[in-house]
Length: 516
View (cartoon, rainbow, N blue to C red):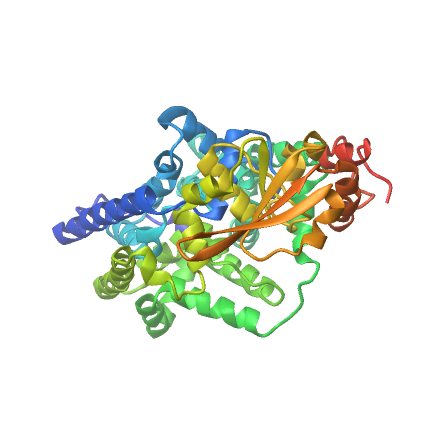
């Protein structure tokens, strides 16, 4: 019998101790996330995505637009502050817990509550307070799954079931507009329906139809913007990748950490129960197994980022809550609480340090840049001088502090190429430019692009910073020596991909597709 036709249990009262656990974990973790959000310096990625919210669009250089829309919404409603743009991340675990509860409570209220609690006790949910592309991806993915679970619990394909399948599709489309990893969620759905629910393929078809506006919006954007998302995610970031044993080993280690030691130990100890649960909780099983296998295969060539798997993270704890023997769930919760507590102690220890405590650390220059940003900019600025940086992380952090977009001088990397959309370097022709760099520069690398080049330096809290001051910026030389290299490296767009626009190409050569 499928989980979808299993008898729905009568309402159960939650044990008072479980309710107290939920209240305590939810409130304590919320307060810690809020504290981190209000006090921790902005990260490079956050500062980069911040500008997506300043310039709302249908898409951006690396990813679809949802995080930019979210930041624009927060800026417009709660103000232009680090607290307002991080608020969605602070509230995210509460929203995910509510979605899990709504999806699972018709099956078993007590185990659904355990699912929420185990997820809330995972250390990441105590520390996750930064806004990234993964924030909306996780949110919409879990909402899509929750709606699908409720649809699958309907005994008949009635009007309510159709509405839930449609809602799941809309949420999946929003997840696609957040990040392409939503495709893995779609693969999980496909595996589930083909393996176990072929009689409900009409529901899957409705789900897919309602999800299509998301990919359609992204397709239209890519057509008119040189396929920037495809070039980044499919081509440019993967060119040098090859198999290394360390990559799958890192993936295994990362997953062991995310699952947490106690949950992993209980899963191994009660593996027969987990296998048996896969027969009755087939959708949950697919949501766990398919992503695990997908990323395991991908790890043969790619280092899997911890954040890549987070949109599937809640389902692992939900599966444990429904699969483990009931008398082990409290043990699991206690182990998770201890593991989370260790992380909280580490965070508390970090907050008790001072800037001077990190002087011998390798990352001390980056810490100074993040904490003393305003002081660095005061030393680097000069009237009539255009400030730039040598990397997108530095440029984004400096720009966030100045409330003014800061370009990156140089070819840059395959990621974070928002300059290609926003910056017209011809506007700087003849101007004086200062490039902030943490490393001692070689003047000859800059001389072809200026009439005169000088290297200045200053100290900030014991860290040297350098300024390459170029007077008389020579745009034609920069176009040839820098933008030309960027074009050849990052805009090798396959000829079979049709294009209606490409901001970088149009600025570089005056055409939608530049001759090579």
